[in-house]
Image 1 (cartoon, rainbow, N blue to C red):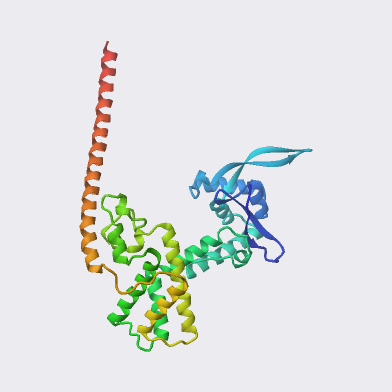
Image 2 (tube, rainbow, N blue to C red; image 1 turned 45 degrees about the vertical axis):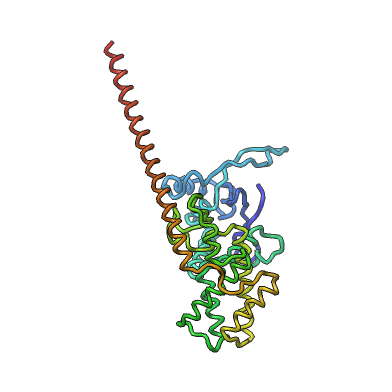
Length: 342
């Protein structure tokens, strides 16, 4: 078993509890859990049986792993049952020991921080260079959150409110300006405005209209007019990175009290993109938002009609298969009765 994750440090600051990470999860044997919670193996076994019997955790929380352990004067390979993090947590909330109490206090503190802040971070672990394979994933997720439309709008609005003497949040100019900034970021990555990108990629004949992401379990009309839903994974990463760079640029100006009129922010945005060797959108592009909605609305109607017809045919085939299955069952029973009579 490879990998290690530090769960928490003991109250005296001397010992640290390490859990092994394998197959994208954390696993311990009953003996290791007994050590973790400073209790006996029979006590751990009793708790696990009760947890499984209550249905609190499924059988999937345990898995046999091959380990090497000393037996007499030789090392022997044996398969030993390991339990993953959900089971370890469940046992930790049941076991009665000083370490069990500490574990519950730690878990309660982490849960409280998560509920209040929406995240829990192990700062010391993340600061270690090369020590955590999930650091890059964390950065990507933070960029994606910062670049999301609502979050981006809020941050840009706050920057403009702090630096632009002529900013009015209720004006149409502010809303139009925000869309202009978004279009410039998207154009810098794809070479198209939002409306142009959507019309170019929305394909009623393609699976899911060629969308790469959408809300819910199926593509709906509201999904097909969002440009980010058509971006590839690489384009999303690039757009998120560029957007967060722009936010850092804008927030730095705000913290340095650089007063900038709204019209001047367009020039600052273009300057930022030029510095980063990106194509700069001049003007509004060749496709209006209204025209895009009309075109894509018709395409979605075509796509949705084909989808409904495919679902109807599938349902009919399922009904036919079920009917055939019933008929075959009845036929078997009739043949059996005739055989019994003979």
